[in-house]
Image (cartoon, rainbow, N blue to C red):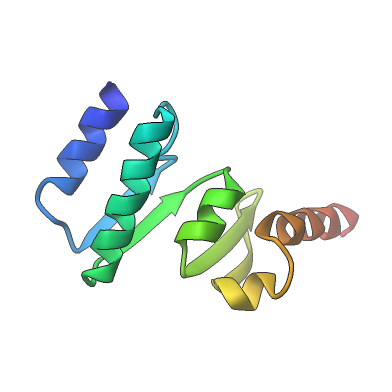
Length: 103
C-alpha cells in the first residue's frame, strides 16, 4: 500500500516530469496494469517520465528512449529502436554486460 500511496501522490497533480525508482516493485498485476496505462497517458499528454527498472520487458514496452547503465557507467543510450534493433532489450543488455566483463 505504501508504493500505491507514493504513486498516487506523484500522479495526482499531473506533473510534467516524474522520476521514479522501480515503480512496479510491490504492485499486484492489476495495479501494475493501471500504472503502465497512467504512465503512457501522461507521456502522450507531453510529460516525461524517467524511471529505473530491472524488468526489461516493462522498459521495452513502455519506453521511447532507454539508457543502459552497468556498475554506474553509462553503456548505451538512445531510442528503443536504436538500442535494440531486431533483438529484445534483454538480449542487448546481456550482450553489453558480457562485453563489459571482458574489458
